[in-house]
Image 1 (cartoon, one colour):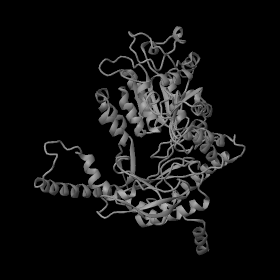
Image 2: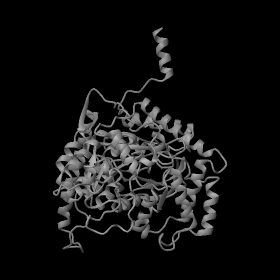
Image 3: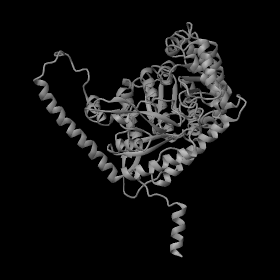
Image 4: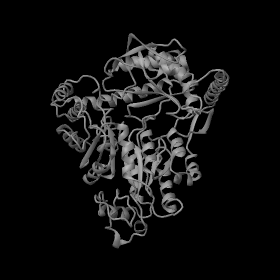
Length: 595
């Protein structure tokens, strides 16, 4: 929540005073014509009486991390931290040293040899790339260009990285498919005649096991309940509304969808958008502006980073999923106030994710909410990967971790993962949603969600809740949970370094070395298993990984085949960084020998 002098020096006579989250105007300006979202006075009174000056008691103990005897600890600065520090408003740089000091204590343990070989590989690529660029410049001196006198449109480290590193392995990315992204799909084969600079599609396809799509509940393929209704909506409404929501782009489907989403996530109201990425990047600048403070998890998604950057608010980061460091940052920023003027912050918003897409970790939401309540800061929860995928009835991390949705001020999510559609939503109080509909550019100027896509979301929610007259929704939720926990457990037994928590359908396998990125991806594809590999700049330089996404559509046979392939490729490439656990057969043979 925003903090003012009245909040800092509150007495019993001002307990019932409320603050408005979205009134960004200075005190001297006239009041906002749509003042909304006031915190309940009884909540403020209860928080003050319960907490007072006592520290918040941790609800969960951070899990122990696996480590090796020979290891190298280094500071891992995430890509989002780098972008926040390089592109944030000047107010951010005013306290850059303070922020870096707080974040620098975040350490990650990797093997010495792995770190050294990874650094050596990148260094080798960089040296040879610079040599090639040097000879290229010499050749360009003798060539005539029609752009003489123009500044290079592509210049700098980004262009160098694409030309000298990415193009060497671009066949591992952007692979086209020619079927629905179900448990199995058809991958179109490509060939290159110029050392991977360009790729041409062929007519050949490979039937591969899909471990890369966000098809958590299996709704991406044809569904006996959803598909007929989507086809009917296409005939009735056409593929697009060809208009914005405020003009002619609001159909009965959009109204029903917003009511369904609000009821599903447990909020009074909701508004939907045509793109999940824009939901974050367009909403944050509307919620907060100059004079406000955004405290963001260091591993938040790029859409949150860009939204925070575009808001004009001061941005700070806290160590990934560390409530104690969040509290430290909050205390320091509240005490210091705004840069230069040291005035109280107009409002403070804490931004976290339900499941972190590159780590597969669940947010420590109960502890974070407790810290935010203590310091009267608003909670913004991104449930792009958690809504529909976790929780007894698929309602996300709030249901899974036992957090009342009333304690989360702004709930964001997308329809691209668990619902087999597209777009995103914001759920909150009726006043909040009304304010966003009046002010958010994504609602005012962007084309509304396609009617068939809206119908797909409505139908999938009905299946999840059992309103289709079957128990398929409950079976899907049980399936994604069982599949995820089984697959993660088996990968760890094989000796892979797997990130994330139980129940999370996202499980990254650490690769580290750049040479192992294409090797792992290509070898899996040869064995008809399609995986997604992720490297810099999406991750820190040393922390390349393969990101596995499990679906309820996967059968146990599919998962066993995938495990066999990944195990053999892991042995071939050398990415099993931990000793494998002996299976039951090996244990029995060992006992016989001892006897």
